[in-house]
Image (tube, rainbow, N blue to C red):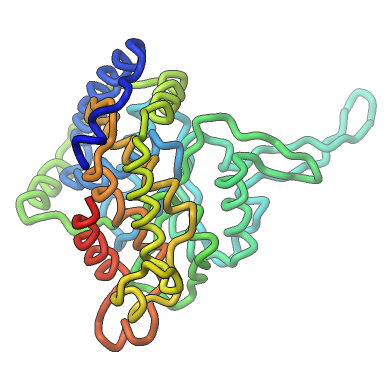
Length: 341
């Protein structure tokens, strides 16, 4: 069936030129980020995938793994406005979206309200430890993620594109946190897990960060060109057979689906929704485009599937008793899906 995927109408000549430009920009972006961030290539690839697909990403990792540095460096290489929101239990929705302040005109004595924009009015927003703030405040950011606009005093204000949210969570600490509900987790296109560096990488980190030099980042893309490349990803053709495979994979995570395997029926209480099917196809398109390819393959779908599915699959008590995580179930499901193609 891989051959069927390849035998499709090719994109227009202009799009082929843009594909070459995107593949070149991807290499340059990775090189610029590597000036400051050692390792984490898989995480960088995931961030670029979400960014080009116009989605959002959830980063899961313990403190001290250069998450903030990674995101700020990416924004700098793209010449985008970056903001960081530190989520705390006392954070209010207005601390994210902004608030109206009462001002008085000294000349006339008249008073009027002026809207002061919050940190969400940026191109790249880092929501640090999003699970440390109550659901009411979480919802303020999640509305902006979904609608790409904020509502203040009954007025809806659109956010300037491109708009990219990266939220972080600490997987270890649970005390004093407010876990994101499944419906809110579904707003994130990808879940990226950041691990500790290797010994060699950590030695390079220690050497680089204790020196006097701070590497300069050269801009690779601007906002306008990034938006154009996001449109290119949308235009990458996805064969019906590939779409059918992605949908079947997403539906296979649902225990009530008639085609669900025994593994899912045994260990899963809640599977991925239709948004997962969309993101599997879109992620595969972005991955193919970043490689300079005019069409995604089944391998592209399988590559993004763990990042798309594992935070959307809720396991049951049986899985906990048997020591099986959502990631384990997803990985086994992806491996068995090879027989479908």
